[in-house]
Length: 198
Image (cartoon, rainbow, N blue to C red; front, side, top):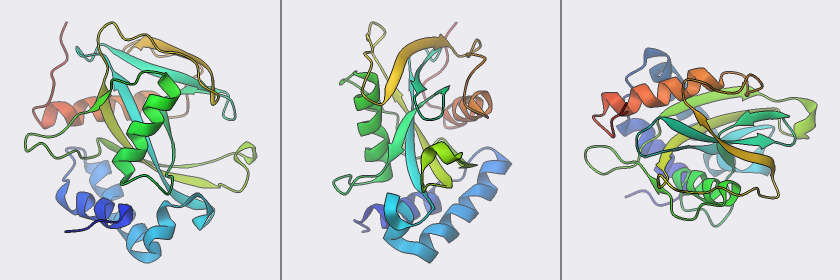
C-alpha cells in the first residue's frame, strides 16, 4: 500500500474517475507530472510548477462556501496552499490549510460512497510575479463541511474570510472560481454525496 504523499496521490488519481470529461483529461496530465517528478512534484522547492492542495469549505446544506481574500493574489479564493513535510497526503494539506486559513478547527473532508477521500476538482493555473518562484500550481481540490453555525476568523495569510452563497460569488474572485466550485458540487452529486438542500 502506498505511503508517501506522491504515491498516495497517484493511487487516488488511478482510483478516481471524474464525472466531468475535462477533469478526466487533467487526471492523466497530473498522473504524468507526479510519475515524472515523484515527491518533488509536491514540494514548493521542487520546481516552478508543483502540486498544491485546496479545500472548498461548505455549509452542510451546500448553499454557502467559505472564501478567503488572498493577500498575494488580491482575490477571493478557496482555502489551500503548498504541501508541508509533515503532511501525510495532499488531502491532509488541504484540510490543514482549511483549518489554518478559516480558523475553524472542526472540519471534515467529504469521502465517497466507499469512505475514500478523493479530489473533487483539479486545476492547473499560471501565477503572477507576486508569487515569487512559483510559476504554476497544479491544484488538487477537496471538499470539507463546516458546522452550520461555524464562525471563521482571519489568519496571517488572509485579509478577510467570509461566507458566500454558492450562487452569488464575489466579483473579485480568483480566475475560474465559479467554474471550479460548480465542478466540485457536480462531482459530489455524481458520487451520491451530500445533497444541496433548498
